[in-house]
Image (cartoon, rainbow over all chains, first blue to last red):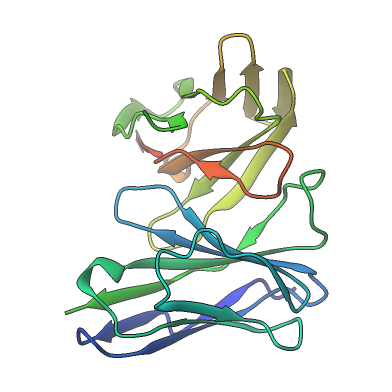
Length: 116
Length: 110
């Protein structure tokens, strides 16, 4: 079956430009996560949704970052006024249920963002 | 000090070797211990997870957790060139949010 998909796969933005990154989770998955992965590092948590509710946004690095999942399926991560330090791979993951009792997350291929 | 420490490598081994990958951690609240494999320009893929201490085996892969030493390991037997990837450990406690290590790059050469 279809896995988690993300678009675009690559994005080049000029500093100060706004960008929107899309995530299509696996159908029926309740939980959705966004991560930021810098070069040579592990993924860092950004935010978490359970259905349409954003339950945790403690990892968002600044108020320029905003995420939504209005109908409980597709999610969009928006970065306003991009800065060079925002250059990274943005990963989306989904899981069937939430909670630590089921740590299985399925990751998408990521969006590679380069801010010039 | 980071919560999860992982040597970035690269670790280069010949085909057929037994590979040992390790992470250390500082937070005793971690209860779930996961290993992900990440190929270049792909998302991480969950290989195995264990709850609390002990061993878990799945084919050529064995995960070990030693909570008393705050040390976790992943062993790969009969390594293959297709195992060449970055291996990430990830740990979580009572929440759903895993803390990842930086990953170890493994190269298995024929």
